[in-house]
Amino acid sequence: MDAADVRRGTVLLDSPHTMVGVRAAEVAEEVVTAAAGAMAPRVIVVAGSGFALRSWSEPLLVALRKFPLRLTIQSGLPTPESVALLARQMRAHRADVVVTVGGGSVMDAGKAAAALSITHDPTPESVVRACEEGARAEGVPPIIALPTTPGTGAEATPFATIWHRDQGRKLSLRGSALLPVTAVLDPDLLIGLPPAHFVSCLLDTLAQGLEGAWSIRADERSEWLGATAWELSADLLDRPHDRLGSAQRQAALLAGHLAGRAIAIAGTTVCHAMSYSLTLRHGLSHGHACGLTLGSVLRYNALVDDDCTDPRGAARVRGAITGVVRAAGLDSVEALARKVEELVRSPALPPAPDIRHDATRIATEALAYDRAGNNPRRVDVAALTRLLAGTAERDYAR
Image 1 (cartoon, one colour):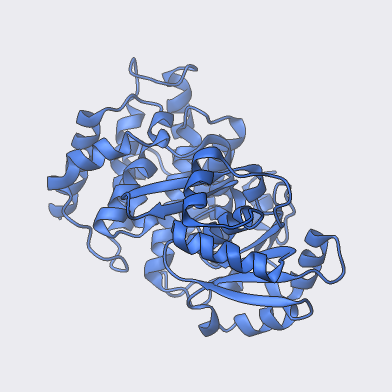
Image 2 (cartoon, rainbow, N blue to C red):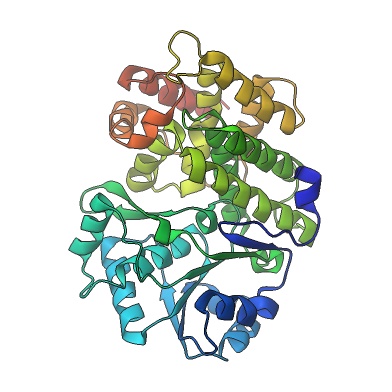
């Protein structure tokens, strides 16, 4: 399969089974029944706070009301407290199928809660413990994911991000049970998405595409997925993000999905590791936080040499980066980095904070995450501090 194939109509992929370019309301009954293996499964829908305001929400609920149904709302970032509450609601409803309808935070909350719903008394403490020990696989209700934002890739990954604000730390719950059985990529679900959210999610796609390609855990599949995500995104970078047609919305969803599949194989790297403090301490949305350092890290990793951490060698890393550059239709690493930085400066996004005074702390915290160890060029506090300071100086020089 090449990029031309994935642009066309409905494409069915395994793990998860993925439906592209269909109307979610029209396939909802089919995918729920298939996931449950029963005629009248009990369904819980986990949706975002803006769900009721979207034009497509009522037709979707009408389709799902054929089943015993409960609708729950997840607001904000998933925390141990919100995940435990949601897991208890799933237990109370005796949910056979979990349908997540929203952005990455909604899908992560629903995935994590489904995994915790099989425990006797889900509590915030048991959520934190599960993040340390991994999710159980047996008995977890199947998850169906309907992303309403492009780029997070949560519908394609076996992990969920949970934010522990008391500890000032990002947690990750991992396990095969968190991988949705079906992902429905309906471009109409992006209608009404604010431009700021779209641009932030597009930056997340670009970061995951590159990181999935250059990670020390990358393979031929993740390199192809990451490069193809960039190829599908290239046409979106210079468009007005408040006037996208169905074809562009579908391309954005599919690019984000493929980038999510890339990191499901290879993991993310140091851009994501630095993003967590930028979100927790500086309030940046996740995609904006990842994109803020992506151009600087791209330039840094492209110069990998004797400091390569990939046992396959520096040539493998440079080749993966070259593959993304070509997929994006560009001729140099610098051109790719500038594309990212132009998107970061989009007027749709809030101005980036001045992180120069906080660079050393952000760098130190980033190295505590295992994601940093996936980076193909050696990093330490001094190197990341320079990258963060350089990013801020370029931003403020304009």
